[in-house]
Image 1 (cartoon, helix red, strand yellow):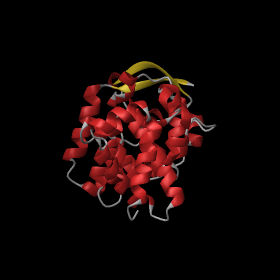
Image 2: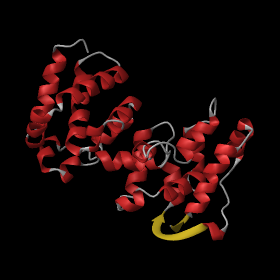
Image 3: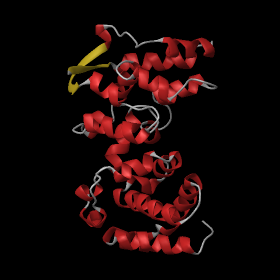
Length: 254
C-alpha cells in the first residue's frame, strides 16, 4: 500500500492546456491510448497522507459496471473529506497514472477524443458537474451521494435495508439518472435525491417503460412538485413525498 502523490496545480493546468491546444486530435488520442501511465517529474508531485492499495483496486475495477467500480473506489477512499474530494489534482493524477487502464477501457477515445479527455481524464464544465464526469471522481461521488442515506438522515430510516449501496447501484446503472440528479438543484439535497431514486425504483418495477424515459419524466415531476408547501412536508415526511409522486405518476402515461 503506497502513499499517494498528486500533481501540482501548475501541472494539472499544463495538461489541460496541452489537450486544448493539441492540433492533431488523432495523435492526441493515440498519446492517451498507447500510454501505460504518464510519467510525472518529482518536482511536479506533492506527497499526501492517502494510502491506497493500487494493485488490489485495479484488480476489482470493472469498466463494464459503474456500480461495482463506484463501490470499490468509495470503499477505498471512504474517509476522504470533502475538501480533498473536491481537489481536481487528486482525480487527475489517478486518471493519468494509477487507474489509467480502467479509464482507457471505460471511456474509449472514438469520435471526439479531445472532449472525452477534457471531461473524463481532466475536468471540463462547472465544478458542480465536472466532478460527476471525471472518470474516477464520479465513482467516489456516486458512493458519497447515495451510500447508507439512513445513517446521515434520520427521516430516511424507513428505507434502511441490508444493502448499504442500494441507491448507489440504482443511480449508477442508469446514465440518465446521473444526469437528472446532478444537473438539478434539488439533486444536491440528500432527502430529495434519495426520494427520487426510491420512487424511480418502485415505479420501474411496476411499469414497463425504459429507464431513460422514466428518469427523464420523473425528474420533471419532481421539479414540479418541489414547491414551497411540498418542500416543508417533504423534509418532515419523505415517505409522503414518495407516495405523493407515485400517485401522480399513476395518472400519467409513464
